[in-house]
Amino acid sequence: MNRFRSLTNLGVFAAMLSACSANGSADKTITVPPAQPPPTRAAASGKHGGPTLYVLNSAYQTRVQTVTVYGSAGSKLLRTIPSPTNTFGFNDMTTDAAGHLFLAYETAGTQHRRQQPGFLRVYTDQAAHALQTLKQPKPFMHPAIDALGNLLTMCATKRICEYAAGEGSKVVKQDIIRRIALSKVKPNMGATGFSSDSTGDIAVNQVYDINVFAPGQTTPYWTITAGPDCYFSGTVFDSKGDLYAACSGEDYSGAILEYGPGQSQNPFRTLYGPNGVADVTGIKLDSADNVYALNDTGIGWNVIVF
Image (tube, rainbow, N blue to C red; front, top):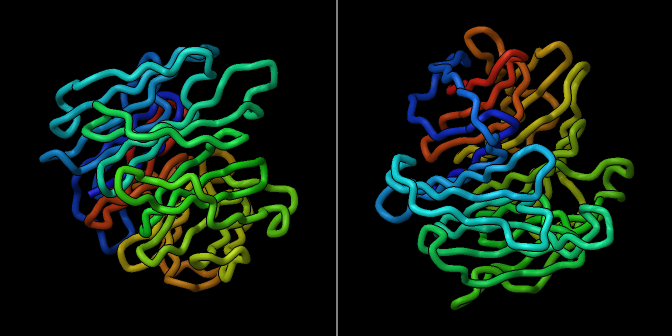
């Protein structure tokens, strides 16, 4: 089982187990306590006899960042990975189905941040050993591993690059097999994240649009446009190919919309929390297709489980 959960500011998007409700109401709401410094990302892998939790910790206006690694479903601290010297700290991270950890960072030089060469280091054995490091001219942003083992990442402001799955000791090859020019899809918007289904389709979140690409294609076959008072803050596919989209709005009003495979603009189900969905900043599923939404209520954070 492999899960990736986004975190923002004080929220830890933790993995919990709960049955999924069929009527669109939440089964559970989990209050998220403050943390100092705040974790900004978390990822988990189900290898090594139980879930391994990785938490990226960062403090405001500092380059000093760490990744803490927890075994035994998050109850045992295994190690801490500091950000490399002479870098801007870690940009992002993700995991794959084999339990590898991917940490993105960029060098700190004379250029502005996000303009330096980017690196992606791959770890194994609960991050005990580094296997390889990928490099590209711009930072690796929003890295994600699709169902085929290929790496998807932003490689320029408005360009997605797909790196081929590796062989032997290489988890990912330093070979780009696809480039998607987002400027040709929506000229004024980059991407804020990706999700992939079991067939290799990828959904690209462009805030006010979600564009879905078939494997190997550079033109989307399916586009979802946000409605009034809505912007998309996260997407994820379930095991059936349904696409969930977190819709956030003004005044902390929002919902989670579920679309059938390949359908266009009309969701067939809308999910709300027990007190409504305020402002979802991350949405993920576990292996049982339970939905976890990191929710900013305006006065705190919680995780709503459907």
